[in-house]
Length: 350
Ligand code: ADP
Image (cartoon, rainbow, N blue to C red; front, side, top):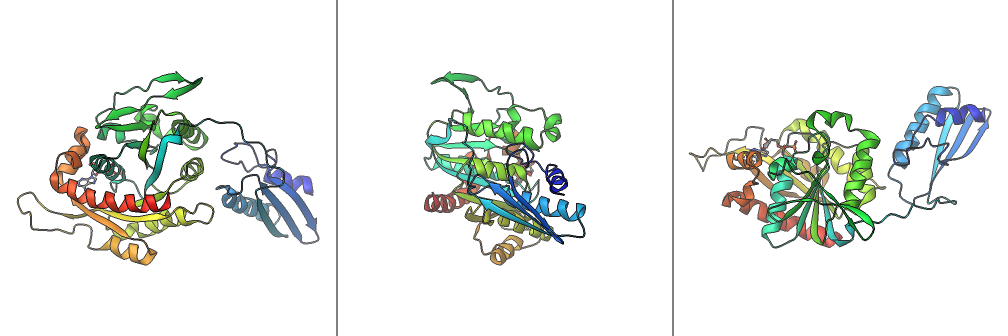
């Protein structure tokens, strides 16, 4: 019976070690009595972000395989026999604060907001880097006009370092430099996770006040593994006012608040909050409804960091490789206020 249970558990793979949980030593005790199966999972780390997911996978699979038994899965973290971590050098030592930019859905302007925030921070005198981790649509290279950049590796202190692109004094590393747009969907799971780990630890970041991470939309394993690689000081959620986005936004906030992750959420930025035509600068058309993000922010107990309307210069700036903060003084002012609020939160937490 015990062997059968282990066989079921061996179908579960730990996303980080890429070993099944039996072989990887996660499955500790397995005990069976007349109607009860109890399994203990040992995680060597004290905060393994995959622990909850693996626990629930184990419960589901055991319930399916042994429907007549009551299943109990116990999680122990910071296991009694921690495996030694491989020695890893990292280039993140010169980064003072890390800010993650997330969104519930694609297309809400997360990448545009990341690029403009980066320029606003740079304009305030900070040294800024961006890690574009959006494997489904890496758009930072285009936003900064460096799509053709081919990163070089250099040898420094016996280690290979990847040289980031530089545009408007911002250091930029993107998963997009390594994949063709048509490849993007294949870059799932372990492959993307490993590539991102390498980009985080081997990019020659130098000294930065802020590293902004443009996360993929939604929530998933990629997010968890990035969260596990770096100490993120604060997270910012980008949303549009549409009601359909509420559930996605709440899920995004919960991802950071989860007890295993515990990253403070600085707040929500409402993008595309209204539309003001060039020729009627005092008019505001609320195309996607009014005040949506303010309501979810209140409901979720997070701050509304600011509202950015739909503006032609923002769209053109993204298309032409110059984020609008650098060219349109109105946009610069909106982002300056938001950037200042985020800096306060990141510094408080860092
Ligand atoms: P995401 O990263 O969430 O998928 P993007 O940042 O790529 O979204 O934005 C999607 C599209 O919307 C882009 O064409 C971008 O130029 C445009 N866009 C984003 N925010 C605004 C805005 N405030 N005003 C005008 N266009 C915008």
